Amino acid sequence: MSALQLTPKGNTYLRTDILFDQFSQNSIDLELETDNVTSLVTPKLLLDGSGRAYLTGAVTLSNATPTAGMPLFSLPRAISIAKDYFMPVMKKSGSTLSAVGIELLNSSSGISSVAVTAAGSYATMPTTATTGNGSGATFTNHMKAVSATLASNPTGSTSYAPTNTITLTGGTSTTATILQVATTGVYGATIDNGGTGGTPGTQTVTGTTGTGTKFTASVTVSGGGVITAILSILTAGSYTVNPTSLTVEPVTGAGLTGATLAINMKPVTFTVQTAGNYTALPSSPVSQSASSGSGVGATYTVLWGLLSIAVSAPGEGYDDTSAISISGGGGAGGGTATLTLGSSSGVIEGSLAIAATQNDVLYLDGTVFFVNSY
Image (tube, rainbow, N blue to C red; front, side, top):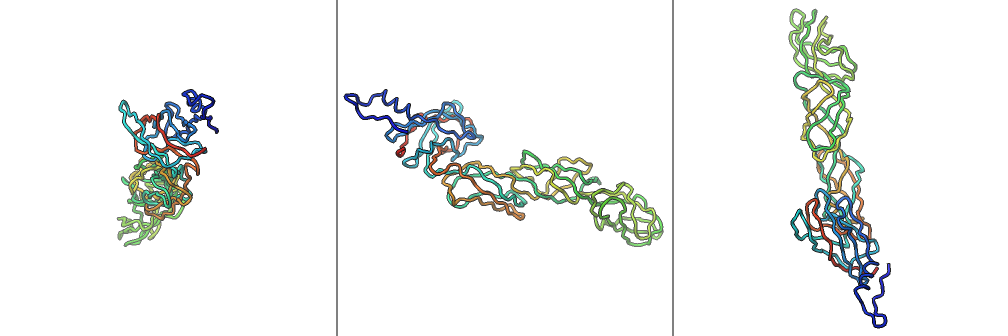
């Protein structure tokens, strides 16, 4: 762009109409960070041709949490500033006027986004930070379930079946995790029919129906050849289809004939049907809020991975030495991510210097700073 000539011509020196023409010619609409602000009166950059720059207009802070360092607008790429500036502006919060600050920094490259490259595996929420140059950026981790194991058995002698879905409860989420039962096993049994002809003493009996590895139980067979007590479940088994009748499951072993047990089934392995989206994780062990089957009371140990990382505040001064660091959270770890800078070399951002509140109005009129030749 070229500035109007302000040298006197003949006997005509600088007049207000010439100055107005200069401003009009060198008026540029600012590019707003629309995730953070909306235009109330179109913000503009005015240049007077002598190095002075003026901001005009007003913006409303639309971000839910306007934090220090939050970008508001960008200067045109051709504009560079003579130094870093902190500039007071008026803020209207409701009906109250007060002062707040905006800053223009030569080192203003903030982090605009973070891309997860490996989800990792964590027991609790990991910490996301940066290494290298730059400061002030903050992040919100969004987590998903990557695997689950059974932490405690069902309650109330209830049973689960393969393909049952289990919705988890707790934490803070936009979408809750849903597990699907892949295999089940026996966790409890009572005598339905003691049978006949068994060998007295402590004996082992085995289930007979269902698809998969069958359960075994330790029982007491009386001198009359009848099961009189169930001592323990020795192996739960692994069923992809539950036994035919959970209340009348025929068992073999110890020479018994006609012996049947009433059994209860627990979930053993799971697939993650819906990974979920959590900003705060449920406490472990995790309970269920619902199931598509009749089983209740079981709890789960869940391992979590990074779904995404949101940039809560972009910070400033980041460059090609900066990187994302993910630490803590227990588990195997292994989560990685890469960052993208919000402004490339030569683009200056105007940022909020002091935290404010949503819907505050910032009046930029009269803000003056100096720019380099353009």
